Image 1 (cartoon, one colour):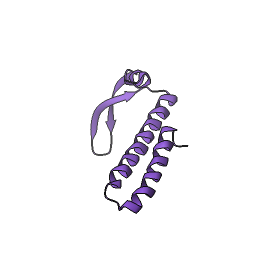
Image 2 (cartoon, rainbow, N blue to C red):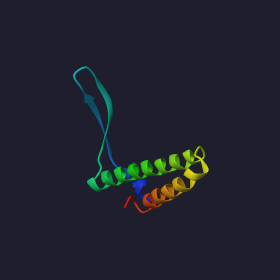
Image 3 (cartoon, helix red, strand yellow):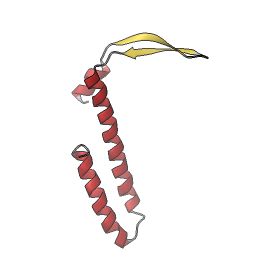
Image 4 (cartoon, rainbow, N blue to C red):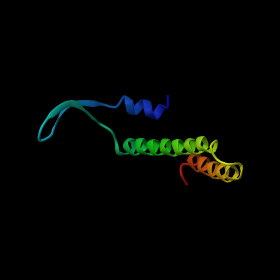
Length: 87
């Protein structure tokens, strides 16, 4: 497991109660630094890009031969961008 993710998983959590107009529920408040929060958001965005790349590759099987070449090039560009961090 990624070392950074493990550190975040082990961050301090404090019991709390979430209260709304009609209900309340028990939960935890996680004590995260801004840098950890932003790192988690960045990881979620990478996953979203990877999922889109995989979806594009999967959809490639249903295209005609002419469109497959164009689609493969697009998927390669998206995959490269995802690996480079979405640049």
